[in-house]
Length: 221
Ligand code: DC
Image (cartoon, rainbow, N blue to C red; front, side, top):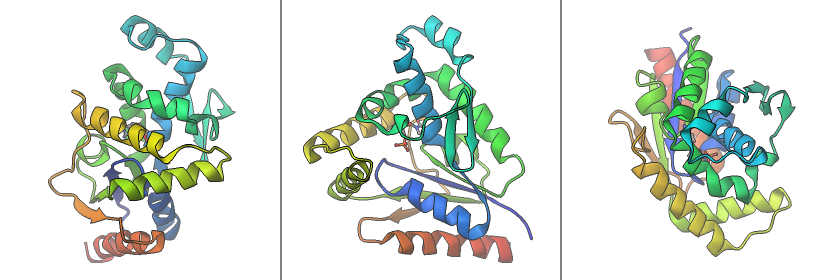
C-alpha cells in the first residue's frame, strides 16, 4: 500500500493540531507538529535572553538548539518542553521568531528529512506551499474568529491557565497578521489544497473528512 504525505495548514485555533494528530493515529502515520518546533526555538531564545532582532545572535544560538520528538512530546536539547512552549509569553513572540529566515531554513530542512519516507501528517503554515509542495494531500483549515478564540481559551483552561477572551482574540489576530504578511513563506492556501471550514464541525467530523480524502488517494491512487 502506498504511503502519502498529508500537509495541513491554516490559522491558529482552527483545530489543525488535534485533527492532524488523530488523522495520523487512524492511518498509522507519524504526526509532526511543526508549530511546536517554532515554539521550542522561541522558548529557547526567551530563556536565554537572545535578542532575536539581532541576526548575529540568532545565528550564533540556533546551533545550540536541538529539537527532537519523542512520540508526541517535543524535546529541546533533550528536555521535554510540551508545557513550556504553550504559555501566553511564547504565544506572544512565536510569530516574530518564525518570521526569521534563518530559523525557518533550519526547521524546514529538518521537517523535510522527517517526511522523506512518507507516512506523515504535518501541520503548520507553510507545509503545503514550502515544506512539501508535492504532498499527495493538502488541506487548508479555516474557522470564524469567535470559534477559534473560544477553542484556544478552553485549551489554556485545560492547562490551568485562565486568559481573557479579548486578550486571546487580539493575540490570534496579531499572529494572523504577522504569519500572513511575513516576507518568508507567508501563510497562504496552496492552489491545490482542499479548504475545510471547521466553524461548525466537531473534531470527529474534521478527522473523518480528512481520513476519507486520504484513503481515497491511498487506495485509489
Ligand atoms: O500552530 P501553532 O499555533 O502552534 O504555531 C505557532 C507559530 O509558529 C505560528 O504563529 C506561526 C509559526 N509557524 C510557522 O511559521 N510555520 C509553521 N509551519 C508552523 C508554525
